[in-house]
Length: 163
Ligand code: FE
Ligand code: FE
Ligand code: FE
Image 1 (cartoon, rainbow, N blue to C red):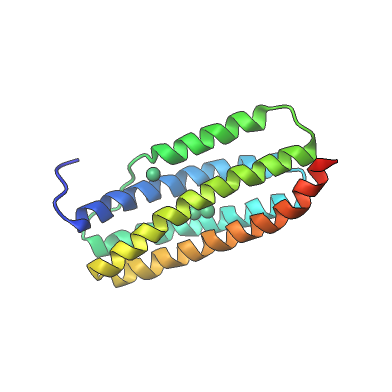
Image 2 (image 1 turned 180 degrees about the vertical axis):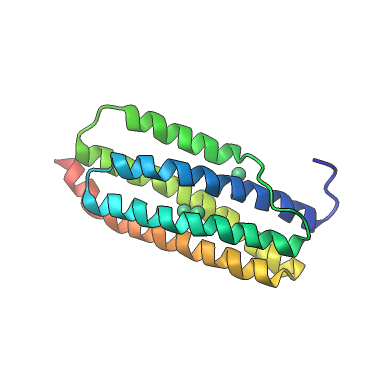
Protein backbone atom coordinates (compact mmCIF):
# COMPACT_ATOMS: atom_id res chain seq x y z
CA UNK A 1 0.00 0.00 0.00
CA UNK A 2 1.05 3.61 -0.40
CA UNK A 3 2.72 5.44 2.46
CA UNK A 4 0.55 5.83 5.52
CA UNK A 5 0.62 9.36 6.73
CA UNK A 6 -2.17 9.54 9.27
CA UNK A 7 -4.07 7.52 11.84
CA UNK A 8 -6.95 7.27 9.38
CA UNK A 9 -4.66 5.35 7.01
CA UNK A 10 -3.72 2.96 9.80
CA UNK A 11 -7.40 2.54 10.67
CA UNK A 12 -8.33 1.75 7.10
CA UNK A 13 -5.54 -0.80 6.88
CA UNK A 14 -6.54 -2.50 10.12
CA UNK A 15 -10.18 -2.58 9.08
CA UNK A 16 -9.20 -4.44 5.91
CA UNK A 17 -7.34 -6.91 8.10
CA UNK A 18 -10.29 -7.70 10.38
CA UNK A 19 -12.60 -7.85 7.37
CA UNK A 20 -10.40 -10.62 5.98
CA UNK A 21 -10.13 -12.32 9.37
CA UNK A 22 -13.90 -12.46 9.84
CA UNK A 23 -14.46 -13.82 6.34
CA UNK A 24 -11.86 -16.52 6.94
CA UNK A 25 -13.72 -17.48 10.11
CA UNK A 26 -17.02 -17.87 8.29
CA UNK A 27 -15.28 -20.68 6.40
CA UNK A 28 -13.41 -22.16 9.37
CA UNK A 29 -16.09 -22.28 12.06
CA UNK A 30 -18.31 -24.92 10.41
CA UNK A 31 -15.35 -27.33 10.41
CA UNK A 32 -14.79 -26.74 14.11
CA UNK A 33 -18.49 -27.17 14.85
CA UNK A 34 -18.43 -30.46 12.98
CA UNK A 35 -15.33 -31.67 14.79
CA UNK A 36 -16.69 -30.93 18.28
CA UNK A 37 -18.27 -33.89 20.01
CA UNK A 38 -19.98 -32.15 22.91
CA UNK A 39 -23.35 -30.78 21.80
CA UNK A 40 -22.88 -27.61 23.79
CA UNK A 41 -19.59 -26.91 22.05
CA UNK A 42 -21.07 -27.56 18.62
CA UNK A 43 -23.92 -25.21 19.51
CA UNK A 44 -21.46 -22.56 20.70
CA UNK A 45 -19.55 -22.73 17.40
CA UNK A 46 -22.76 -22.62 15.37
CA UNK A 47 -24.04 -19.62 17.29
CA UNK A 48 -20.75 -17.85 16.77
CA UNK A 49 -20.83 -18.68 13.08
CA UNK A 50 -24.17 -16.89 12.79
CA UNK A 51 -22.75 -13.94 14.73
CA UNK A 52 -19.62 -13.89 12.57
CA UNK A 53 -21.69 -13.58 9.39
CA UNK A 54 -23.33 -10.49 10.87
CA UNK A 55 -19.94 -9.21 12.03
CA UNK A 56 -18.75 -9.30 8.43
CA UNK A 57 -21.68 -7.04 7.52
CA UNK A 58 -20.91 -4.66 10.41
CA UNK A 59 -17.28 -4.36 9.33
CA UNK A 60 -18.46 -3.71 5.78
CA UNK A 61 -20.64 -0.86 7.06
CA UNK A 62 -17.81 0.51 9.20
CA UNK A 63 -15.81 1.30 6.05
CA UNK A 64 -18.30 4.09 5.29
CA UNK A 65 -16.80 6.41 7.91
CA UNK A 66 -13.37 6.10 6.28
CA UNK A 67 -14.66 7.37 2.96
CA UNK A 68 -12.90 4.43 1.29
CA UNK A 69 -14.23 1.31 -0.34
CA UNK A 70 -14.73 -1.88 1.65
CA UNK A 71 -11.98 -4.29 0.80
CA UNK A 72 -10.11 -7.10 2.45
CA UNK A 73 -6.38 -7.52 2.96
CA UNK A 74 -5.44 -11.07 3.90
CA UNK A 75 -5.00 -11.35 7.65
CA UNK A 76 -1.92 -13.57 7.84
CA UNK A 77 -2.33 -14.02 11.58
CA UNK A 78 -5.82 -15.48 11.20
CA UNK A 79 -4.59 -17.61 8.34
CA UNK A 80 -1.94 -18.98 10.69
CA UNK A 81 -4.36 -19.58 13.53
CA UNK A 82 -6.73 -21.43 11.21
CA UNK A 83 -3.86 -23.46 9.82
CA UNK A 84 -2.90 -24.47 13.35
CA UNK A 85 -6.45 -25.51 14.13
CA UNK A 86 -6.69 -27.52 10.93
CA UNK A 87 -3.59 -29.52 11.78
CA UNK A 88 -4.77 -29.96 15.38
CA UNK A 89 -8.09 -31.30 14.12
CA UNK A 90 -6.22 -33.97 12.16
CA UNK A 91 -4.59 -35.32 15.32
CA UNK A 92 -5.92 -38.50 16.81
CA UNK A 93 -7.43 -37.70 20.16
CA UNK A 94 -10.10 -38.85 22.57
CA UNK A 95 -13.30 -36.86 22.05
CA UNK A 96 -12.99 -34.99 25.36
CA UNK A 97 -9.40 -34.11 24.63
CA UNK A 98 -10.24 -32.92 21.11
CA UNK A 99 -13.01 -30.74 22.55
CA UNK A 100 -10.56 -29.21 25.02
CA UNK A 101 -8.15 -28.53 22.13
CA UNK A 102 -10.91 -26.97 20.02
CA UNK A 103 -11.82 -24.62 22.85
CA UNK A 104 -8.18 -23.58 23.22
CA UNK A 105 -7.89 -22.92 19.50
CA UNK A 106 -11.12 -20.94 19.40
CA UNK A 107 -10.04 -18.81 22.34
CA UNK A 108 -6.82 -17.85 20.56
CA UNK A 109 -8.97 -16.66 17.68
CA UNK A 110 -11.29 -14.68 19.94
CA UNK A 111 -8.37 -13.04 21.72
CA UNK A 112 -6.87 -11.98 18.41
CA UNK A 113 -10.20 -10.46 17.41
CA UNK A 114 -10.65 -8.72 20.77
CA UNK A 115 -7.17 -7.18 20.45
CA UNK A 116 -7.94 -5.91 16.96
CA UNK A 117 -11.37 -4.52 17.81
CA UNK A 118 -9.91 -2.88 20.90
CA UNK A 119 -7.47 -0.96 18.74
CA UNK A 120 -10.05 -0.18 16.07
CA UNK A 121 -12.53 1.18 18.63
CA UNK A 122 -9.89 3.39 20.23
CA UNK A 123 -8.83 4.73 16.84
CA UNK A 124 -12.43 5.20 15.65
CA UNK A 125 -13.10 7.28 18.76
CA UNK A 126 -10.03 9.45 18.11
CA UNK A 127 -10.96 9.89 14.47
CA UNK A 128 -14.57 10.76 15.22
CA UNK A 129 -15.88 7.75 13.30
CA UNK A 130 -19.03 7.43 15.39
CA UNK A 131 -20.80 4.79 13.35
CA UNK A 132 -17.70 2.65 12.95
CA UNK A 133 -17.05 2.87 16.68
CA UNK A 134 -20.56 1.61 17.44
CA UNK A 135 -20.47 -1.20 14.87
CA UNK A 136 -17.03 -2.41 15.85
CA UNK A 137 -17.90 -2.14 19.54
CA UNK A 138 -20.83 -4.49 18.92
CA UNK A 139 -18.47 -6.98 17.33
CA UNK A 140 -16.04 -6.67 20.22
CA UNK A 141 -18.84 -7.36 22.74
CA UNK A 142 -19.77 -10.54 20.89
CA UNK A 143 -16.16 -11.72 20.83
CA UNK A 144 -15.84 -11.08 24.56
CA UNK A 145 -19.05 -12.95 25.31
CA UNK A 146 -17.91 -15.84 23.13
CA UNK A 147 -14.59 -15.97 24.92
CA UNK A 148 -16.35 -16.09 28.30
CA UNK A 149 -18.74 -18.80 27.11
CA UNK A 150 -15.77 -20.86 25.94
CA UNK A 151 -14.02 -20.43 29.27
CA UNK A 152 -17.16 -21.73 30.98
CA UNK A 153 -17.30 -24.74 28.66
CA UNK A 154 -13.61 -25.43 29.17
CA UNK A 155 -14.11 -25.88 32.90
CA UNK A 156 -16.25 -28.97 32.35
CA UNK A 157 -14.41 -30.13 29.24
CA UNK A 158 -10.96 -30.00 30.84
CA UNK A 159 -12.33 -31.98 33.78
CA UNK A 160 -13.62 -34.66 31.41
CA UNK A 161 -10.32 -34.72 29.52
CA UNK A 162 -8.43 -35.45 32.76
CA UNK A 163 -10.04 -38.86 33.03
FE1 FE B 1 -15.50 -12.21 14.84
FE1 FE C 1 -4.44 -9.54 11.16
FE1 FE D 1 -15.17 -14.33 17.09
